[in-house]
Length: 204
Length: 321
Image (cartoon, rainbow over all chains, first blue to last red; front, side, top):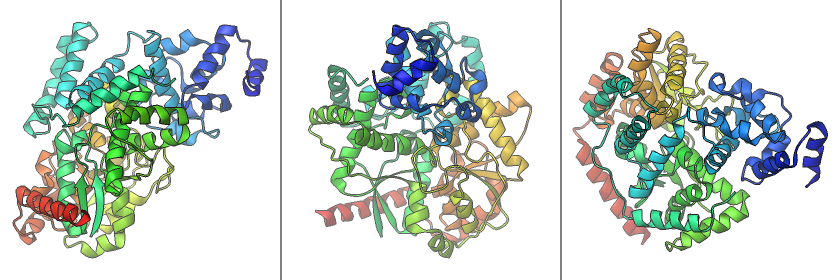
């Protein structure tokens, strides 16, 4: 363990498992910056969605330092991050908080801890499936897949979709939705790239 | 004539922000710039991909950079999300050698290679820096006098990369509005978030943000808002009615792409700017400018513009060979 982490353990009581979690977060590109956090709270003060978060961004970093893997990864915090980067540019210690949120989303998925209260992950999957099959995102197809999945898994009340109808109709009437997806010539290349990335085991 | 490699992004090419793509093409002629569409580009991946699989997301984004590197031109995109994720790929590859090796391995499997030389730029930044507001001012034939516009930067034009404008209090879009003869109104929340893609899974959160933005812009006296991002436009325009219902307001604020406003001032035929695709009608606010613009502009249809553009592209590619 390097010196920065030992300094951290002077002020927080950590279990071995807890230390593992901090190390794990720090080993992810962008995640290493959590070591620089001084808990000033600028990130939480800047966040437009902090009111909807289980843990504020500041608290999330404190929990990472305390090794509380479950509390961090089970929360909805990263799933309501809109990636506006206001926290990132305001942080006096240059902690890459938005990058950290993306990393926590990946970890939460990896450990199967994603909270059932969010459907953001489902939207992400529909989005990526669209890229994998066509090379580009087909917005209508992606949204249909998202709503179908969330309705079938009981996360969206089908009747609540009624209020989405005027929106969908307006987009259609103004010809802002294409019915047919565009498939790029290199769609097979995308598949090959994604398969190769999987074979390489990704990056932490 | 200035040449660039062009990355329209999924929504501007034919999706919810197709008006952005069309109006971008329409202003190239008057501004003497040529956007050569990157052949067979793919989705940049944006937040959904980088929040799911780091290696695959950077590799997929880098395919575009590898294709662009062959052209030797700067890669220009009108989409703030594409701008951020393509820039992110560049900076992750620079910072993390392990990631770079693996991404190169992925690209080699499809016969591509990326050396890391492509500069990713936002269309607005290109117009602001390379064309310049002085030149734009001299080309304005239809000054948008007394039009009160709120300049909405959104998040990812000015953040997180150390960009071309102040990241805490950007001014470029305000200056741009003034150069068109219009008036830029006070808009304290000009760089705050519209909710982006969270509008799908977390619609209530996004509607709250949309409401705050509309309120801030309208209280500054704006009669319309101008954006530089397809997602911002869709959220503020298409979801405006839903936000109004939820919060009992009625702003009826047209949300324009900066290219639409620019085209109008440059005397481009309104049809080519796809103003009819705006859900909150722009007619009430822009009527006095669109009629003037239509009188002045030669009758160029969308297909004529596209034909001319493709001829210019062919000539360019031939010249490069």
